[in-house]
Amino acid sequence: MVIVMAWLAGVVFGLGLIVGGMTNPAKVLAFLDISGDWDPSLAFVMMGAITVGFFAFKAAAKQSRSLLGLPMQLPAMKQVDRKLVIGALLFGAGWGLAGFCPGPAVASLLVGGSAVWIFVASMLVGMALYTLAVRRGWL
Image 1 (cartoon, rainbow, N blue to C red):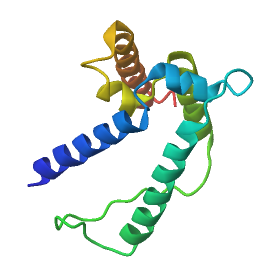
Image 2: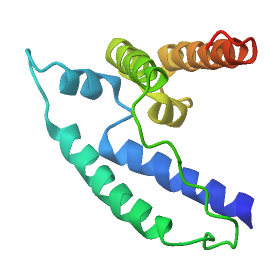
Image 3: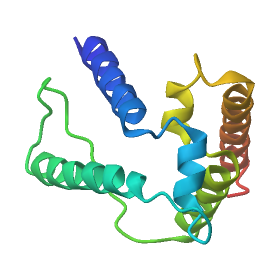
Image 4: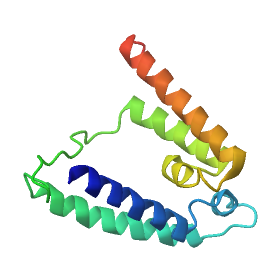
């Protein structure tokens, strides 16, 4: 049942990204281009997602178990550290250069053409390098 619910959540998330326009790199880049032909429509998508997430996390924090009976596991880190700042800068740079972030990129794999495949491959290489760096004690 857990796998079915995870799959269903992924499908709903992917559909939300598609409907919200987050899988269209041109739309994302237009949103990020605040000094040019700025398209603010994705701000409304993000505000809606942040609002839903805020209340979902508040409700989840009051629970010890998920709806499926599993232990509730929420992030414990409450402070901004160097790793978070560096990760956010890398995330933002990748998003600004490619017009994709991880979720929309995965949702676009079947329809996004070669650019999205290159982005996802690069993302996976970056994740592997990060894992290696952590294991070796470099980070």
